[in-house]
Length: 528
Ligand code: BG6
Image (tube, rainbow, N blue to C red; front, side, top):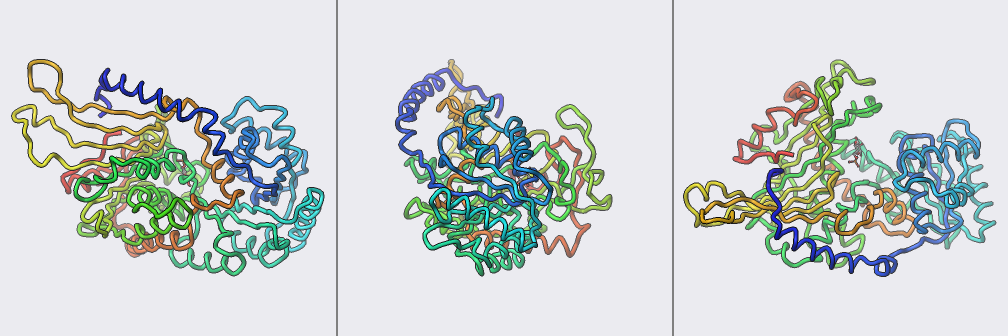
């Protein structure tokens, strides 16, 4: 497909569409959709950790730079390590310098932002530390003439979630007054299987109502992922063919070139099925497969996603419907990397999967019989996330001989990252007196069309939470429906741990068995 040329005519047509797109994305129309939350405080539990450094503080800073935060936003980092406000600010400045998408640092914005940045050392299970936090928040709120509006972000290891939310929920820290809001963002992994996810939901619901709980899946904050619903439901031409009558199959790929980095211990208990498939990949699938919601509102959208998740089943007509792999040593990006079992924190005997391919079927009217092939892995040749919808071949092939043999099915590819584009492949006659037919591409590229950088997923999600919009967060029944699908697979593996794990060389596209798996259906993984 990479060799498929984009014709000059298509480029010209694109240029015209681009011009229109620029008009509709003019600053005026963008400004109308800007929303600034009311004054509030954000408390980040696990403020010394990776997530706060790489994502949360840089995202808040970018929002501040875009004028999207209340002027007097307070951010309190809560962590176990001793730090002063000053040393925390210095550390966060370095994090913004390194990880922010908006460089260089804008000094006046940083100064304003840093004034509201504090650090509080505390133990997650020590009530006195929560009392002190409460005292600090109350003083800040009093000085700002408000009561409440507190966002608690759980950026800690999941083992601490129940302790922290229990401490917040059981005291006035979680319910300061009647007119201010309290919200909690819970990072993934949300649970370890269906039972633990249910237990965590039950625990959270003892202290908070569902509309106070924001379960984050950062894929939902990605611009290209949000665009799936716009692409499907703000256009007329795709929806009539978005079903079993026209679609042959769907391929969802979440490929990473990275290994487990310094997270070997976490990954050992997660594997790719918990780390990517149960959340990010199933969310992509749900957005592709869901029915149009009655309105674009949090519950209407999430109702439809839940229906999809409940209609999904793993196709076990051959084996258990999955191929598991684990990377061995190999070359990625031109350098030798160790195998998974040589990574720090990983058992040399580990049977944890770092690659998974699976075939899912969605038992509803729209998708009856259409396979959804999902694959994800670490240490693959490159980072690429995409959804490819492959349509059926024409019902009658009019073109004979060599020309007909070259006909390929239409494919619509929604590239999520690093390319941010939507591409439609269709057949075209090659100019000349012969009858040659060749696939060509119609391509939409975000960067070219809108000429502005996409915000980081965490920017959108933090802002939405401050604004009380939970559309891009997962609801309790949604997360449980995803676990209900995945847990039986994990249980089958647990009962047969050495059963089906295949080794693949780092820097390749996974085990050969994954190719055999899809080829047995007469299909092939897309070459990426
Ligand atoms: C995280 C996983 O949720 O997503 C990581 O825990 C993975 O293992 C990451 O690397 C991928 O996110 P992105 O945004 O880089 O595709």
